[in-house]
Image 1: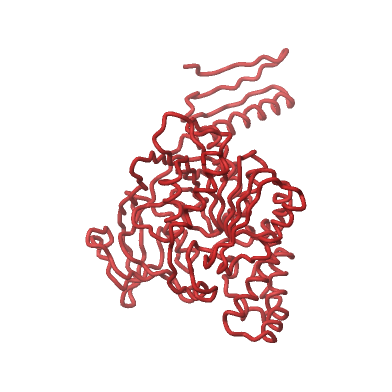
Image 2: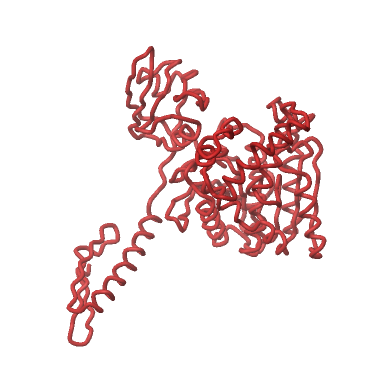
Amino acid sequence: MNRCCKESHENNTIHIKTIDDDIRNPIYLVESTSIDQKLTAMRQLLFVLLFLSFAILNAQELQRRATWQATIGWPDNKTPGAIIKSIDSDSPLKKAGLQTGDKILAVDGRKILDQEDWSAVNYAIRANKETSILIKRANKSITKSVKLKALDYEKHSGIKTIYGQVVSDYGIIQRTIITSPNANNKLPAIFLLSGLSCSTIEGYPGRSNNWAKLINDLVEKSGMVVMRVDKPGVGDSQGDCGQTDFLTELSGYEAAIESLKASELVDTTKIVVFGSSMGSALAPYFANKYQLAGVISEGTFYKTWYEHMLEIERRILSFKGNNESEILRKMNQWYIPLYHGMLINKKSYANVIEEYPALKEANYHGPYHMYGRPMEYYHQLQDFDFAKEWESLKAPIRIRWGTNDWIMSELDNDMIINVLDRNKHADHKLHKYPGLDHWSTIHESELNSFTGKPGIWEDRISQQVIDWANEIVGTY
């Protein structure tokens, strides 16, 4: 093994000495006899260190997330803590002496002040690692140390399931999941972009909501490779989703699609991007940048986030029984100044409310978060040119909007079609799915979806996406 290297420059000599040139433990010493040469050596050193840092990041293996093996209620955003509702008989929590009714106040030193904290803690706990839990019981504080078990991995009969990872340009290692039917040839692929929330894309055992059902059907019934990537701080990924801005999240998706395009499993001329909610508005960007075969967009939007939020607040006020005069007053006095301050003037809710205390009554989000994401996320989102990506789109596009989707407006979807028609886009369709809401569930009305009443699933919800994907790549 070489222990040092030497580079001559005229009469002076720069020595870049390595104590050990093993990539696992590089230490560099630089000597020079001139200022210019010192600068040159430092630049060379910086390049080497950056290269080695990237190599080390790629060599790191993500640790598997843990499971509580218990039912724990989410914080109510009014008082700190998360209350244990029940504990499985074989859970390490039970063996450590935790009980039903205990309130978890902190995990590994992170206080549970709100739902953002609890979400971050849930994804941060790692299997087979000492985890410190501070609880409150009968007016006493108790600290317990436990080693939690690993969450079971996703599995599919007759399908290869590959847990991998990518490194974003921000140095964050993120979990990827690639599923592929057993085949001897390269297959078309679906690249999945999820919505806004800090929710995993993993279909681990026991997860049964309708979004998970849709993903499961894509994996098992499409006949295509399917790739997903968890956001920073979600699933096994490094980071903190509640502190991740829009551009950082975008970088993780870009690293994932680049990885998919390099995969030996995939026919790279037949990759379809399927986006839901926030992912649906990003899908055209990825199709344009990476020359993908097509776009499937569900529950999308076209206008700015400022306009979008004002429309949502108007609908919510109506759902809550306000008459039109009350809605007008509250929009003018509350929501227009609140969102103008937050999205146009790039302030936090806390900053806006400090300037206009009367707005405190209107804000049901945290002082620095909305839907679990930080203010920086929305400041960058507001400036992202979604309209340009829709206008530039050349790939085939299939759009679905549910008639009971109260999150995204029908008008936004119609606007997209009008733009595509005006630009003489060759292959686009919009389907308005009767009764469907924003979360892949059939409801009798928007109000039933808003109030959280049970809806129903029908297989056509996922089958339509599968049919569209195969139609775009020419399998059907």
